[in-house]
Amino acid sequence: MLKLFFVLLLFIIFQLKPTMGLAFETSDPSVILLQNRISNNFSKKYCNAIQNGLSKDEAMKSAIVKTENIISFSYNPQKKWIEKSDLANQISSQVVNDCGRSIGLIGNEGIKYFKSYFLEIYEKTTPDKNFSR
Image (cartoon, helix red, strand yellow):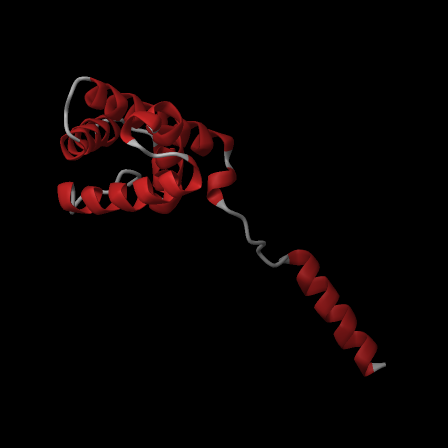
């Protein structure tokens, strides 16, 4: 009888206050759309700079600074949910798809290379800023 009482008590407690489930904030459609806009914006700026004759380093720094300025001056509460690694993956994929052949980057290897290159230059260019914060 005592066991039944404890089981019933535990059941009632869990019904009144269910445990929190694990969910990723980036699954929110508005966060995904914002991340798409950021990566598209960066890719356009980077690819245009390459086509205009800038070096890879100059194009990268220019695109980072221009994209960072747009993001930092916009008020969008969803930007705090974007993970830097996820954004770097998406930016890398976008750039390799848009203009990867012209800079010698193709497929997954090109994406991996561009991601590490992007993160390295990003940390040097804007050490006190974060694209998504």
